[in-house]
Length: 272
Image (cartoon, rainbow, N blue to C red; front, side, top):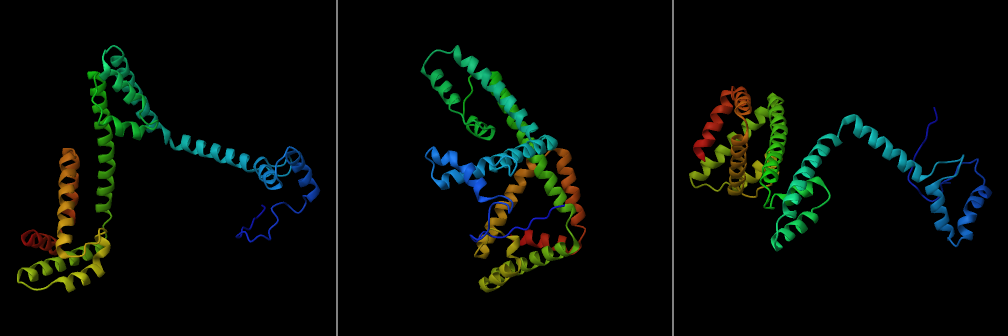
């Protein structure tokens, strides 16, 4: 099997093979140059189209890559879900257009213009239609059902990732999390006694900053960010199905079998 070695271009490399005489290259370039192209332009054109029997050129390479990409998409069925969404959107828009065509007045014409100006991509259309007031009740219902379907898909994916992450927590991660909560409790209790905890907080962030990507600068900022996380988690739990909530609760209970962690979390709830 032939082996190839690649290196950074430094101007000394010969882009053509050793068995390709310069005369053949010049002959291939001659027609373009005689038609008025500069040598640089003619050479770029040659590199794109290639030389028959010598090399295939960049256009051919691009075509082959596109073909391989299409084959891989077909194999993985990546376009399937998106195509389903597009078909459902097309049906919704057809219904709305049909209804508007029978509606007199400037408002209907403006709505038609708004629909005609929708972005060509599915995500863009969904984003714009969320602020659109449908005239056709069936189109409105179908769009609401589509949004509910997307919500379920997104939540299902997020739930699976969250549940998998909880299942994969190892003892070291759990111990580190417990230590972090214990130190946070200590800072809160010291501040409650009137002590300055900013130096301790900075040391805390040096060791546990990776757990707080927002990079809070003070203890108050950290508590605000934690409150937002807890509120977001509450909203997520409220949107899950009963079965998903039960599964997540079971995973939490499994993690909370560590009595020290349970104690520290209860202590944190008291301090907050």
